[in-house]
Image 1 (cartoon, rainbow, N blue to C red):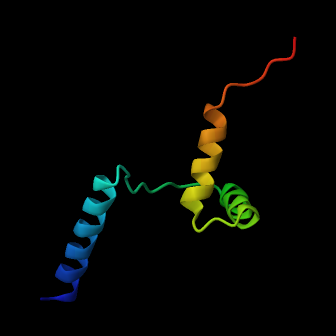
Image 2: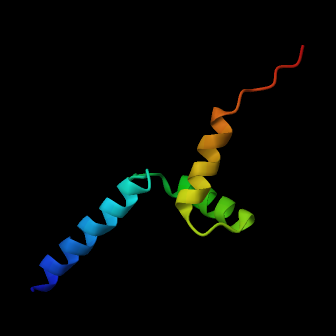
Length: 69
């Protein structure tokens, strides 16, 4: 099997495992300073990936804001 075909097969299986786990792979284009922020959060929180750091930011944004009366 040619290398390209083997690589495509691995990608297909990887994406299938992600879907079965209820996830998707997404490609984003972000400014360098935003990526640096994500990397800093990753480092500070001891996370394994940028995805985990980005997910933390998104979850924080979903939390209701507390209003001061």
